[in-house]
Length: 417
Ligand SMILES: *Cc1c(COP(=O)(O)O)cnc(C)c1O
Image (tube, protein in one colour):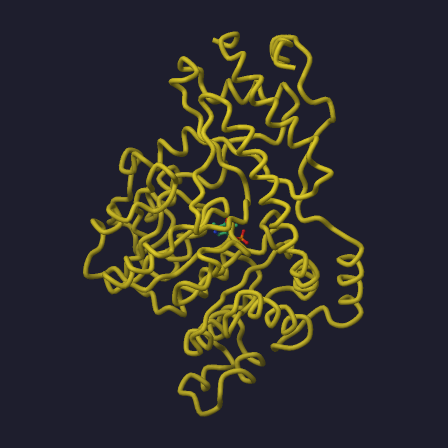
């Protein structure tokens, strides 16, 4: 295989099966039946009943938390999470500079300031950098388990404790991932997850907030689940009960058909993750042999959900060959799912973070972060490529063809210079 010239230069491709090669979520007969049955039961659920209650109960027991609240999107779940956590005008929240923007953007709608902190070379929050950015206004720190690789939660829990900060989690890549056997999303005061299309647990569109704290739970309800649900869930004697009809004025409920899909998927999640772990191990073992391509370091405490396999490209080992050109050659080999992170990128690359005042009142005077402020974040992003992580044994020939395509391009990189 590796003796054939690169497909980009006219040789035979490593893979001849046409793409796309990866689709998520896997839709089975059970999903079709569940969604069709939901059509007959209820397509609007104003309180915590029916499929919404079933999904929330199942999620609470899966995660091992007291309360979960489903929402229309993960972005909405984060908005409700921050609001319920009491984040308000002028408050600062430390978020990694490398994440999907919705980890931080809801903070703009609370008048709060996302304070970006650099990541380390492994893409995890750099706690020394985070510590330097703490001020008297810092309320919380957010752990994002990027690509489903859990953050070091021992370190984050003690960091938050030591600095008197609330620990929150964005688990949107990491449903079912574990740290020391405990599920991500259960280490802090509360967490949010996206249930969007490609996420490990998918509702198509949806989100969820998880917490053990009843006060926080009531405030999540008041933020985005007004009227019936608040009236039935918040005890009449509670001082917040008088706000039940209007809540805080936003309506962010999940659609029952989306809830039915996620509820049908959830019992299969651990099976998907076990499959991904086996295949990720196989991919890492194969790619570990490829000079210039680095597989992620996985702590012995971590049980990743492998939302993707992030690989690091060492340009120096390829005589400066740009990653873009390397990837073009990988694509030409037929490995069309290999790509660079798109929307999960340095937040400084977004106009909204650089100049929030241009769109949002209240941020006019503030100088946003600029490229260069977060060197490790930018370096990690510039040198990352990623692959999907398949979960079925029958995908193994495809998986092996992908790792062979990368090995082939690496072996022939001189032809691309
Ligand atoms: C997908 C995602 C979100 C936003 O979720 P949506 O359901 O798309 O609104 C937030 N944070 C992270 C890390 C994500 O990957």
